[in-house]
Length: 437
Image (cartoon, rainbow, N blue to C red):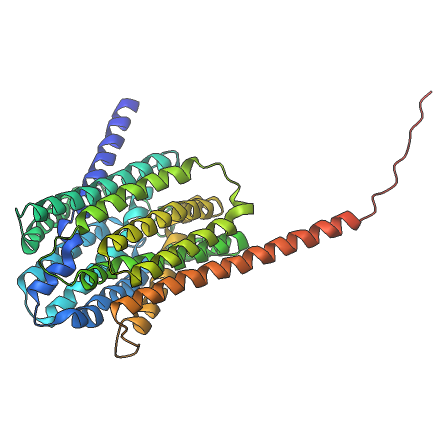
């Protein structure tokens, strides 16, 4: 019986890892902006940046709300299929349309694809016992790495050796998305969920929902009533906001720096290097023996400050290779520190509330990204800055984040010094000498 269970568990792991690899295998994504410039050449850079790309952010923010509300009620698996379907629709629409509205709708599906990641990880944890969380997390990360790194290497090789053009890369991505959709249909369903389908002995629909919302509220209060947890969660959300924004608009920045369609570009190679470096950073974070309770603010400050200066350099450099290096270092720092932040948050929340807490943190990150996009990128509400000025703002954003944690660190240091002085001024009770005869 035990052998059968182990075989079924390993089969489940393999099926999830296969889906993970397929959904991350998107060679066209590393050259997406170059493809759009060719496919929709009548629009130009400004239209794509101001009226197309922002819709991905807006859609993702709205979709995270829907996912947080319904992910547990609908028992996860349908969301897994929805991820693959969204990727298929988005890729198909940008390939076979030539008008602005379908392209904008495709960005909505791209945003949906990204937002459903919350449901994907919740599904993984719901299907395994807590004792296998570390195993399934590490293997899932490895599958994500394999998909993204393989995509970057393959795309760069096909473009550099002129085997395929930007459009033809989309056929590979579309095929992978279709395969992921079919694969998702055969993933095992979840019979019990964390909140709404936790206990089948509930007598009524009303009692079941009342119990679910009560447990969600309990997890929420426990997760965000801890000041230490709030400190790491705020950085997690703001740093994720900055990283996603930098990642989404990096290809337009490289295009502006190169400004020559005939020059060889290395987007795929850069993304592959960043993916591997991010994985190594995550591994490094896992083995570092540091007391983050006393040195956390220093780590967050240094990381944010370095990221800010790197983006300021990237916004001004006339050399695309310098920008490549800046992006790799920026992403490597993010992956290293976000792993530490995620670990510190996980230590201070209920084990079953991972999906809820990180889903809320993701929502906060996307809300901040939406505000940043409205102010910096769009022209209807914001300033519609050119791409170099946008990255100057992103650099200032990270520098400002660093100064916030400098202030938090100084406040905590002064508080600890004050507590130490109070403790040292307390007169200890007199000791009694006991004489024995």
